[in-house]
Length: 496
Ligand code: NDP
Image (cartoon, rainbow, N blue to C red; front, side):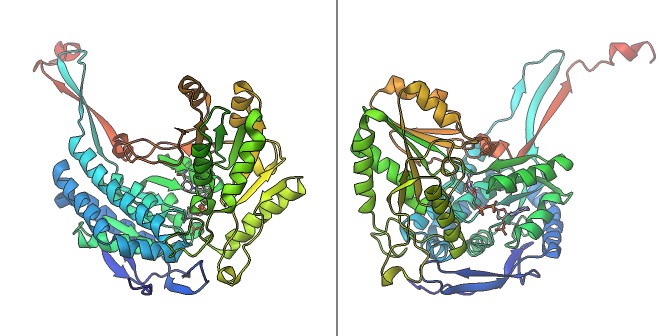
């Protein structure tokens, strides 16, 4: 495999490769800090141009009049293109984000699956004939919104990009994609695939550039009819306020502080593996990271000891090593933030059971590595249990019984995900129904299926993505009434 990332210095705007007119964006390899690429980012003028081209493209009869199964063919081609170029996409994403090749390959294949699923969903969706309340037919049909946008974070770019672009196109819209400035490269690979698939020009543009300039312009532009955002809660709140001012629908997939629960009757090997995967895979840079661990008091000491021992055996290493389980964090600035959270936890009285530092040794000196960290001794009200760290840092807490557990788990501003480990299925069911989170995993964690809706409650967001309704979320519902009487309305008859 070619391990150089070719400097791609053009953006895909309105169906053409153009130099961005905004500030430069730099991408470095988190494993050693080497430069991947510097490219001029998008500007406000680039956003305006992309919108203008998108408006033309979305209204062009050659796209507007396509039947669903015809529109789906483009999505199938994009799905195949991503799969065909998966090695390249995975490599670029690993260079851009520091994720392991194993993970980025899985993300690329997930993106391919998302386009395939949305194409199939589109082909099989039905409009509704609603029960008639008079001598007329009533129908509910779905139509495209027009020009839409997706704004995505850096932690799983190709997968989160696909979760917005695929349903938006399936629904018949045009879409502008604004990726994070910290992971600008992989969206350009997606653009190449989309161009290769022959999608009519203008329907897709990708605009890496500063969120406060490019993102802001996208959100506030009158022509944008929907924004689907994945990112931090404060950014999401800001977008929601701006969307409210122009009465634009938004979907917000935000942060989390997800509880994982281990009951005394759990299969302990399965639970240890699931807890570690839930918090330490992706180096904890995951919205759904299981970052608060509640263990039933009777097994607390034994379970935590087993977990700490297993965590110390995890392989922290280079993203291109097949055996690596914990790769570097995305940027030095982000590692500084993780370290700050750990310092605060220490100051609050937290006891570091393992980790809490950078790994030592020459292999790690130039990369943004951080050891998987487990911290005990802090209450559920502590800063560590309330603030999203977005790194490999786990807080462990005991619980006494189901009521205590549910109260503590739900006592948090976030509500994205949760996990339960127990052999008692009725108990799992009871607890799952009581947890105030968008997703609950039982005896597993961080499993995803494009066919199953995803989203959060409370500060973790509003709206759902994925599933068949994922396409509907990008459409406007329209009601049709069709007269069957063929007679003038009785109210006006006397005046005729
Ligand atoms: P941010 O909120 O900082 O950024 C997300 C995106 O929003 C980026 O593309 C960013 O651009 C852009 N942006 C920033 N400011 C604005 C603005 N004023 N208007 C419009 N767009 C803007 O999040 P991170 O990139 O740091 O991602 C991490 C966060 O994402 C975590 O909180 C995590 O939990 C959450 N997340 C949620 C997921 C979910 O499905 N619930 C999944 C994955 C992550 P730029 O990079 O240029 O600043």
